[in-house]
Image (cartoon, rainbow, N blue to C red; front, side, top):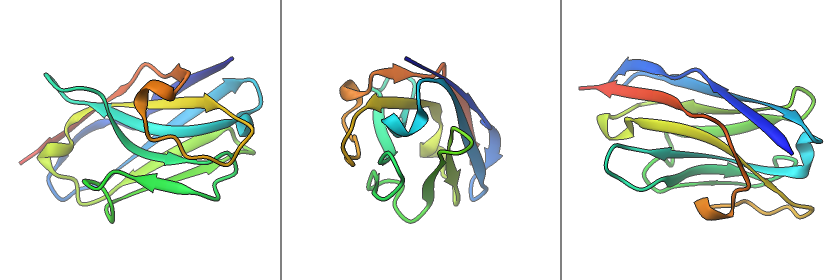
Length: 126
């Protein structure tokens, strides 16, 4: 198992930036494909970005391409999401998630992730 704890959320004006971090503990971090997902009020949880076990592959939702960057540091057991040019539509609770795998896949479907953090609120004001 792996435990995930997010940090870095907050309130920011449109056009601003935030950096989310997720610290993992437990089983070997490089055994997991990692992802960031979000859920806005009244909406389903949606994929934002994902990264493969060793960081060789990444994927982004169309709505965040060119603005968000995912990265991971397996030596520090962390995965991060740099969010630039934030928009009010980015307002949501952001979750870090992990999927146990031996392959180099990037997981884009929320239901595939096995472990979830508690979430961190991101609010973008207009």
